Image (tube, rainbow, N blue to C red; front, side):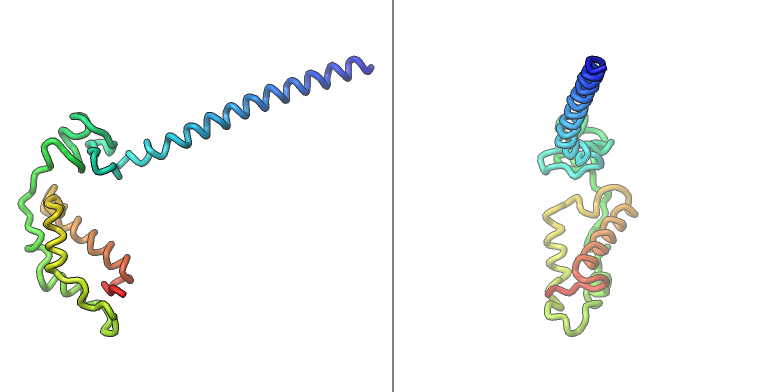
Length: 160
């Protein structure tokens, strides 16, 4: 009968409209959350802005719960104490030259990187290689040089 068919079509259309509104609401909510999440996710395990502290749990913020006990980086209160490691004692001439001399003889920038320039740069960040255990210091320095050699041509430091 035409009336029943019209009613069933109207009900079906109504159900489709309600489902669409619900779906649209869900998509809108997901979009809003997606816009807010990068900041929350970025805060995990640090990556904080320079004016924020990284808490002992890996979140960014300010205040004693972020900058106090266990603060990993940033304007910690007080700053992490030094372990007494000496970066110049770890990065000796032999150590540094052993890395930079990996550059090919035909590298136009061979000699561009110097130990003195490295140590000068390190002096602007007194926490580099001096926080945590002595082994932590060596690991941080090794990670820096591994990253530098990778970014400048894998297994050689060649500025071109």
